[in-house]
Image 1: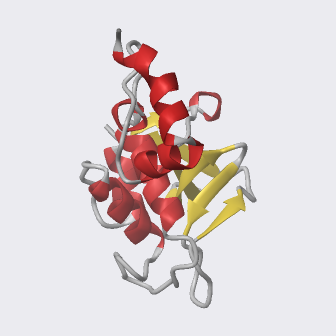
Image 2: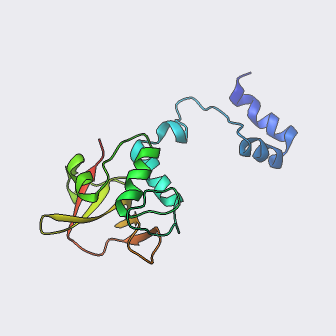
Image 3: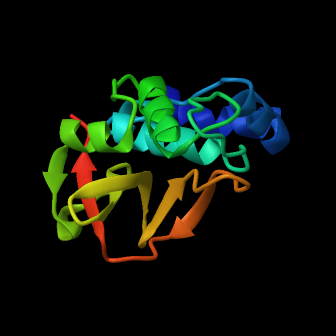
Length: 157
């Protein structure tokens, strides 16, 4: 009998609540051909998840976490926790990414806000036209719709 064939009988004996308790404390069932969430997660999706986990953290100019952030501090912190190194400022981060088109953007890519050729803000693309970012003094890390067309996209290498 394979491990997969034993799962239904184990669950029947243990009861559904016990099966959920086993899963909650780290039990796992391996299914061939299906990647686990951890194995499937890229640095970009990990960075996005980390940024989202900081929802509500206060903005502070120059802050790089773990409890307060400015915009580039949040992106730098999130990518560092995901195993990638980014420079400190939004403009420096833009210069270190592979520039991509809006049509090629993916969740986890960086969104750079610019005025002319000057980058002044950065966030992490969450999909559906929204970003996670740390906006300004008096505000907090939040999910927000991109409010302008003056943005460039960059993919962390």
